[in-house]
Image (tube, rainbow, N blue to C red):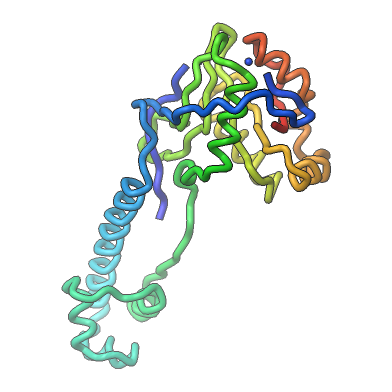
Length: 253
């Protein structure tokens, strides 16, 4: 069940590669409309979408049952359930689980896959918020306008968002805050796809300075440096000066 946001990417200086944070000023997470959706809003929206999608699926399964000439009794017999339960499903009184939906679909000639798709930025944890705060304290506000949770595109089907977009006279830079590198190649590819879709001049991965992440960056260097070749110090120097780095880069803060 794909979930995506919409809205255009909007326009906006002192971190060291050695991981020595120079400040810890907190920042308020502001998006295109000045506010990041709260957890209850996200959960409520997801619940409503899931309910609609489930209702649509049950209607499709009911229509397929009728088209196949299967009675509720015959379907119930094959599923090992009662006709009353089938009736409750089709009337929305009861909700079948994922296994029951898949079996129902198989009996009426429909495949009911369950897949997960990217649906925008995940809910930020405290560690990620602290990482963004350190990055802002290090890079500064004089040369850049900071915007957080900026949608990648104005396509309503695309719910991806940048953690941060810096906009200034030099251009626009996307920042992705990563507290833990788990699959460096996949995380890098996702960032590049966002950059290409939005047409940002540069993309910088801001990675938390930890032993695990240092090792992960070193291990993945042969596969990720092609897309993020700029040296960390050069990237930081450019950001402090309000300039675009010479290329995409990865920095540890």
